[in-house]
Length: 337
Image (cartoon, rainbow, N blue to C red):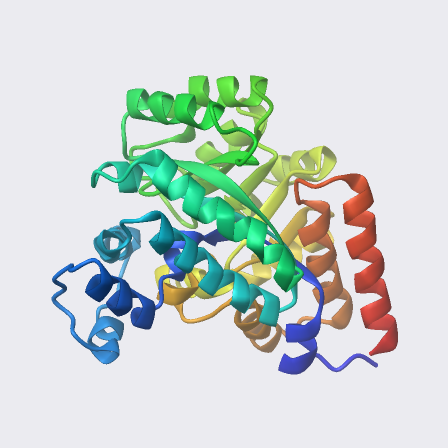
């Protein structure tokens, strides 16, 4: 009988498919980078930084989130940011990770696209020494213009060897995914994988999910648990093997609960759904913390936890051979524990 202790969950092989690298900026590193780059912050101590991590809605969170990015200025900064996360990923036995990054947020501050990308990419290369297979997914900021997204896509096309996929994040209100239909189509034609955020309980959430499934043909939908409002779309997502990346702790900050009942329902319906940490420095926990919270609040069974971990590999953008390797590793882990 598997005992779903924290130690078991931490050592369990898993993939992480929904983590914003900028959202892993811990207070200590934020202060260190501010000092390194001579950035004057309103906060002077770790406690003062932590005191700012209070939000009632997505817009409030994004205001704090983007303000913190000002300390990220050099290739070394982005490398240090990514490596700090990847070391935590290794500790959580994340065997494979696909990390989001937001170049537009940095270019708007005068930081070059290549500075961001090259610092992060070097960290993904060096993460091999940690036994973590790491890749990058570039996101469009949905509250920026289509023209800005197009220019960003053109830069990504020059570095396609370093970028695995294209995503969509930031403030969803009045910024539906169809706003970027052309950019997604071009990205898909170029061979990029496609995902997009459909944040929980937003205005027109189910409409956005429908467009992502039926028109944009997203391979994954980030968050997206509002799909349970439409049984036909749930069945379609299961048939098409579309993945959903739920993030319990961030759900708990921005909605009434962790959306665990929705996750259990999607598992029952054969939809590929997995657990992730989203912005762990801002929402109080890395991937093991998210598994632990879901297990404790919703009494997940060992079979459900294993299914979530298996889905994280099945939903990933790696070869079938790599997936099989990780799935066999997961099977052995459960058999031996």
